[in-house]
Length: 504
Image 1 (tube, rainbow, N blue to C red):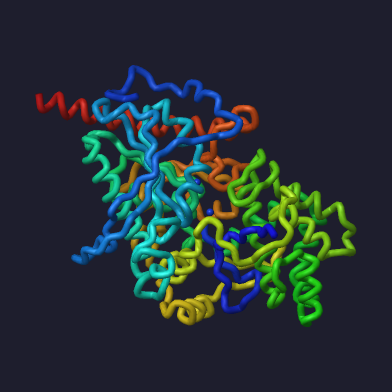
Image 2: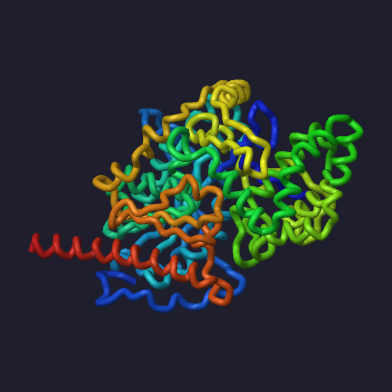
């Protein structure tokens, strides 16, 4: 019997309701030529196939103590287009997210597409505690308790990237090759923070769909569900209303054992639901994720989905009479979770991409509040830190540090701070993406810029170039990104040539 994997990117609050969820934000040059134009990026194949070599790096467990313990960190290594160390060709490094690194590499085709243009080496390091990069030898040992999980945090992850790329450049005799960072979602946050914290390691960062402001007292906690609601309302008023009414209907129908059994059967669950909150969380996940990946063409990032899947979910829902609310909701779920029609039942507990470490990060440093207005399609809900802390203390024995990320990397008054401090970061966001409300949406300086598209979804710009289906606004956005990368490289090589001339 086939089962559908439930992407575990959320943490159920002690309130144990669909509206109390937590999600994670989830992918040539010796010297500058006379002119680097935007030119033709070439035609991407209809079905992308990417070549890389899988390698392992002996990574330090704790970069900030004298402890010498290590673990094996996976990274993907793409040399096909690299111009070589002798030409000082650039190195493009993707900052690995909360999952298997192959998953993110396969969905970051833009880096592969532009590698020939720059003769770039591609490096995709996997984030510690995700995929196969497990300290202590296994996921079971790594996730054993708070002591074993203590080394899972952003500071250690960034230091991993720094040590890996530094040693790799040394081993390749490529110390003079510039590094450009890429990342989407949480990986985009890491790319921006790495550029700010380690400016001597990388000359610039393309930070796509990175909610670096989605923290307490910095960005609105309502922005995520407001955007999801707006997406569905724009697709169909009837669809929006059915979803809005479904939460109380689920609770009422699932208030008895017999009602839960019927809901489990109606929604084709592999095992019976324990309570209506499980169904609420599962449906809420679908609305949130389909808004994130509301791409203008079919995709298979989170699930196999059609083009503009929000519209398709609403179309399926609206094909059923409004009087049958649960049937309408199931029709929408079947689009998101089973568009290929190959699944016999749905499993709520699967983690196909190796994402389960996010709950620990959410309980320690990545505290990203989400609340629901009474005007959204969700039940009104106000995020409460003490309730959240109780859940974390109960499950991990730790109390969240809700302001630590902002203290570590900044966020308060970011425009004034970064205007005089940082440089060479492109923040790209699409306003269809629910995470965009926590992103940088305005230019901060001439070199820390925001590229915002009205119809863009979650790190759509990092996906493979598809000339036949990419809308013009997406082509324009990517060309603008390339202009910034061109400038970073031109300035890097010019500075090096000037320095060499002065030494001579």
